[in-house]
Amino acid sequence: MGKVWDILQEKDTVVLFDVDGTLTSYNYGEYHAHHELDFTPGFRDVNIYADCRRLTPLWEYIGEHGTERIFCISMEPHGHEAWKSEMLMRLYGIPGDHCFYTTDPDEKPLIAKRIIDTWFPGISPRKVVCVDDNDVTLGRYMKETGFCTAHPMIFMEHISRS
Ligand SMILES: [Mg+2]
Image (cartoon, rainbow, N blue to C red; front, side, top):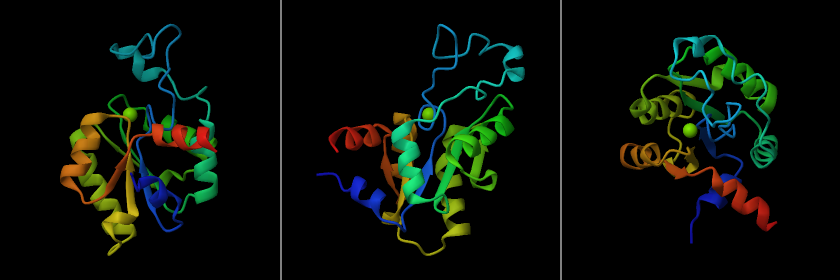
């Protein structure tokens, strides 16, 4: 039986969240999951985060856990960092200095290790959970860090049981 849900409930656990598809529903377009201007230069000028809604199970979890031990690691190749951070504060109360961005998703494990080394040196890797909806990224976290990993659906699974 998986232990990650129990670890997520412990108050001193540090949680590193992906953003797109984890703290947002990844439904940015009118008729598509991708915004219609994605893959075009014009996409840089579109704030896809302006009308994002909070995802209730994640919002309730973060509200209970507090944001001191919540961080975000997000791939952002479109220059949308400021809009994304504004959304994370507005919907979840996550401070801007807890949001980290990269253009290379392969760097996520390195960023995770840097965050932990900087903010929580010496913490047990079993007290850190990386949450991401991307299977390849979850595998990289598993191989390249000692941290626990979870797919965001874990929040849906447990909320629906209660
Ligand atoms: Mg994602």
